[in-house]
Image (cartoon, rainbow, N blue to C red; front, side, top):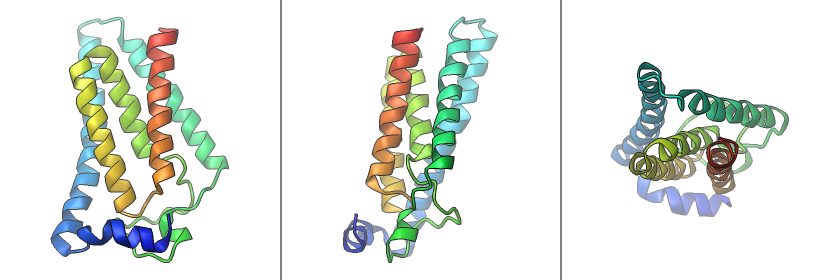
Length: 164
């Protein structure tokens, strides 16, 4: 993505109201994933559902692997690499690839897909919306969110449908 490409995709979100809505959507979508997932685990535990252990292990192990990779691969964020004014402001340097927010949303979506397909599809769509917010907001390149989504999906497929 170039400076000009970013300016073009972010232009419709530059008004104060649109920027505020994008920020709320970004935080709200992430929060929705991070609040509903522990509630899902709690429900599985209370019901003594044997799927609770894989539902903890698959996202947990995957998250650690992605986090370690990002620690040693310091990919710059768009606001570091390009001459842009991002809509979403962060102080983080590097650690852009892959997007951990998007990865987390997608691995959680895969957990839901394994447990309840309709809920999984809904969370896949929410993950895609979060990816859109992260790119338009200027905190991730498209490759960052695509890689995060792909790794989240692959982690779920391997963890739930191949291993378990």
